[in-house]
Amino acid sequence: MSGAATVVVALLVGYLLGTFPTAVLVTRLATRGSVDIRAAGSGNPGGVNTAHVVGRAWGGVVIAVDVLKGIGAGLLGWVIAGPVGAYAGATAAIAGHIWPVWAHFRGGKGVATSAGAVLAVFPAFFPLDAAAAAVGALTLRNAERAMQLSSTVWVVASFTWWLAALPTLWGPNPSVALPITQTIGAAMILLKFYQSRPAPL
Image 1: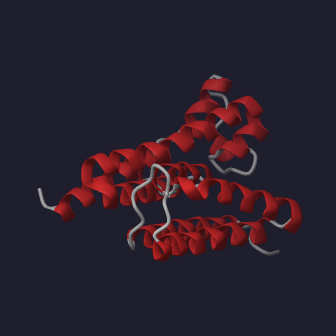
Image 2: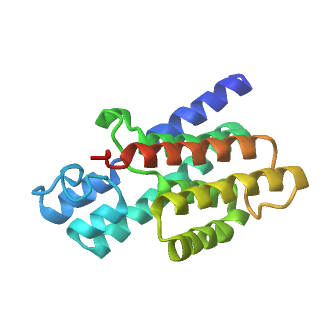
């Protein structure tokens, strides 16, 4: 199998892993099937909405599993197609979480899965990512601006690590695939965020 073909396989595996409907299954388990998270609360099948609808503990389970989806996709991609496959698989998991084919492309916002993807392929950035998210949430007090800040820091950091050849801890050595995939990941999350905003009255 050629190098390009193995990267495609890594993409498909990452996407499919990303489509795993964590919030839907956890909510059904917690409520014995009486609640569909996609029709409750904000309607977003993610950890925060699950926490609001059925409790913080269950929301924490959803977030943890969604993080593991990103980690698993990155590691499987690495096994299948090397460093480029790791980047491809991790990024595809974000797409799978946001636009799962099994749910008519109606998924979550991808934040937890992106955190797992970062832990797999860009772990050195994770503390900075968490700090940017915390600063945005505490100082901006505006979800849209906080998301823009976090995404901007993410993209700028990926270019910085690549251009300066900085170590990524246990992640792949930074190549041009790093800024490309991290920019795509940030763009997908921002797009989903804007699509999820309530329409103006």
